[in-house]
Length: 259
Image: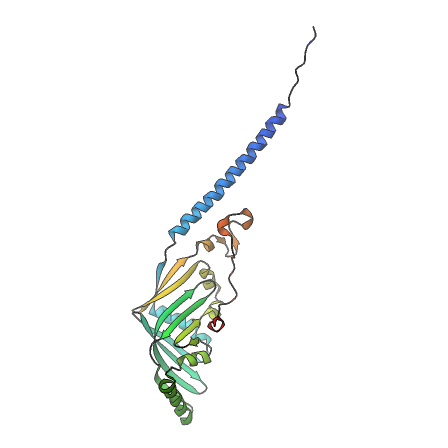
């Protein structure tokens, strides 16, 4: 009796191919699930901090910051402090320039605040002419000249010399009655503050009695970075939500460059 041999198939090879296809499908599904999950968590986190929150800063804290970041860095200024009131503040400044020692004060309104990773700027509108509270000069002639210059500014030019003085000693930039104070040149040496500004930004501020209320927002995108420079999910992993620049510019824009 002659036996017939049935043709055989390579079942092992077919099974491996099916397993390989299933494995690829599973890995693809898992990665899709992971990336979708990351996006969902990110969106929820972003939505939870989408609104601004108030950060109150006391008058004493403001003056401490002025002393640390301005007074101690500008030798011509002996004192720079503020008295905060509802919707306005009074600025006191004591300067010693070219043999002229003067304590002056003026009232201002807060026009704009921008404190973020790129720009750290306060913009003030001068509301009153500067009052000269104290004036000491190395000579009678120079004292007379200072008084004459102040009178000329106020009575003839109808302007105030404070902006000119602050610009002369390289503190702020004036434009009409608006004064721009950029503090980036002092803050950029403080790595802790700059690191914080990668996570939080101040959009504007409100002056209240004895306090400054900063309207602040958290940058969730920067919170999801490692050591401030490396993304937790890199661009090659293709999470669209993290595309974009991650490094700040080297310095703030000065008002003179804005025209």
